[in-house]
Length: 74
Image (cartoon, rainbow, N blue to C red; front, side, top):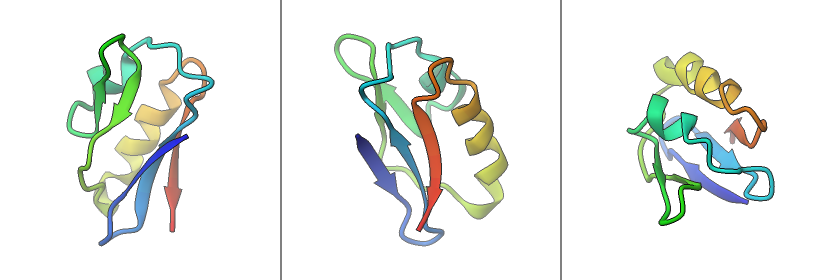
């Protein structure tokens, strides 16, 4: 599982790499937070998730058809 943490807010994404099949919705909806690897699987960028962006981050996670993305605090 890969993770990225914002030191200021404590919000971070986690991707269950066993579930990700590379649909690309995450990096299409939130290219500021996600990128893709050479074969199309999601990778988390080292970018801040502000407290005011929590709802958008949760929407992006919910858009994953496999439920591979989570937004975590702490």
